[in-house]
Length: 472
Image (tube, rainbow, N blue to C red):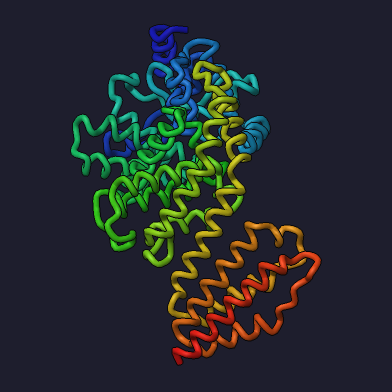
């Protein structure tokens, strides 16, 4: 049924049949009582930009896969997206509709576009019902686009409905409305309008618009431009991570914040975002609830990596050492087919493979440098640091085969040298006590030791002792 036919049939219903009832709706700033009619389902067209599925329809469009809701194919795609958006809730509503019938009235345009009630129409079609009870607006969609956008947003995403939407859908909805309003309004007024329609504060809308910019950058960095399904923040713990990154970007970008290390630049901030994009891709927040993620740059400078240049540089370099080969491997083994009708599944598999390669290393990198931050904060508390170091050393098993490797023994020797150096500066007497203790416990094994070398070293010690005695 084409648009002209739909208008004729719906007009005939609204002018020649008895209204099912009446309901007030907010139309052009006033509560207006409008009649409710039973409209045949065959006269209705799904709204492909419905707030519940906006990320998925945008993903389709990015692939140049236009959804035409007036065709059987397009209608089927939208129905699948609506069902998958809230499958468990849809099953509950489906049973209610079957048992009790349609209790909540929808809203459609004069040409049959569903403004409020897409999900219910989908479920009624699934139940093979014949009619949908709806208010019929006196205009077609294109006749009063802004007012219909306002009405749709108020009903779909206002205070009573917002909990039914995934975060990414709200972010995208705010972005799409902003793009329409900014043509005729200032940025400030556009944000005020969106806040009013969505039942939010202007600060909340500003945050959402900032977050969606970060999401756009995230997708572009991973070569997923516009494939918003890959930034779904509801099911995989990404939302908090995007919110953290938005806050850090606002804190550090184009300014000199006391929360960052001295003399950082925008290049450093770009590195920060790149590192975070890779942590988000690895879904660190999924397994660790974002608690480790915040150590990267959250809070005052003494509490995070980006607050200390030495720690940040070490953390960043180690991070890229781990991720660069993993990215190269994934790009080689999982080339992206942007035309695939299973693009979301393909890219999800790609990201899961990346996560498997790096997640343990990335978590270990945060834990190691979190310890460095703790040590830095306690640098003027030697008793606490020495106690921590003692616990770590006590945990070492010197009988383990790996303890005898040149790498481990070299690190032990370096540790002893550093400790001796600390003591030497403060207490020569303590230094000699350590030397005496080492010599008194000296028990070479003739079977494994180089006796000639040991004798030469002892002679050197004798010479040094004689020289030091003369100096004293």
